[in-house]
Length: 106
Picture 1 (cartoon, rainbow, N blue to C red):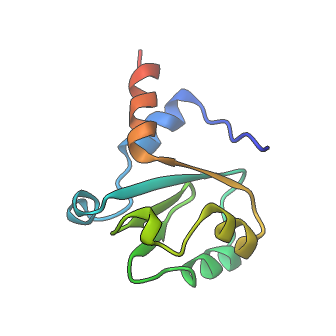
Picture 2 (cartoon, rainbow, N blue to C red; picture 1 turned 90 degrees about the vertical axis):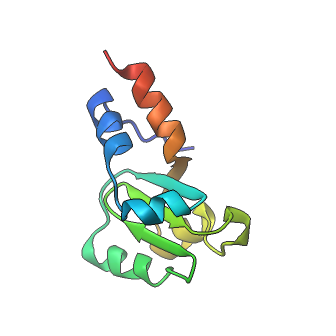
């Protein structure tokens, strides 16, 4: 198992960041953050965009995944991401990250 460590400041920044339009985020039941060891290079970013679907969209260094339906309706998964891009990641819901940021705040 891989661990992807972020500082308190990075967690706070991730929790505040809006990778998509506010209306899209509000309407979507799922917004997850995929933590990576390093940012995706241009080729990997391009490959990631091939995984977009009618209900799945992606953005950013910390790979933000917006799913406009239930995750169970999506063809996207952590395993599919790792196989396609040949990188390791761990995904957490943005609400979880926000709660963690609150606990870490001074």
